[in-house]
Length: 112
DNA sequence: CTGCTGACTGGTA
DNA sequence: GTACCAGCCAGCA
Image (cartoon, chains in turn green, yellow, brown):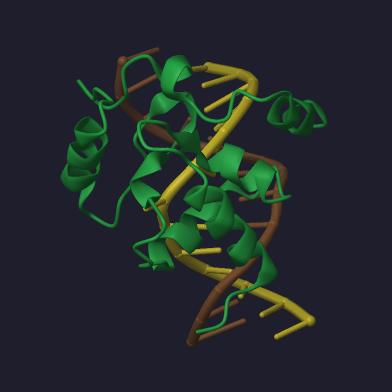
């Protein structure tokens, strides 16, 4: 199975997300070098079944859950298991569990 | 090459 | 709060 360079970068970024933290598709795209490729990131996540990749920690903007191949309930359960509360369609205290809060990402998004 | 798709996003109504 | 829209981009037919 061969992955494009972009896919490799995306996966390596997702692998870096610590337990109990989340990142948005847009964040992952930015860290992978393509700030506007959030949609493409979603496609890659959908196709990736690698267990070293915590896909459940990748969510949509604003703390929305996004998708999870039809197993959205499973995604919620996995997040809950890491201490992230998901009362409804959005996670609780999004700004607190969001990763990364680094200046690097902010600068990347500022170029938008 | 062209065209469509979608685990997206930000804007408007 | 919801609904719809245009822009976006990698992957695939």
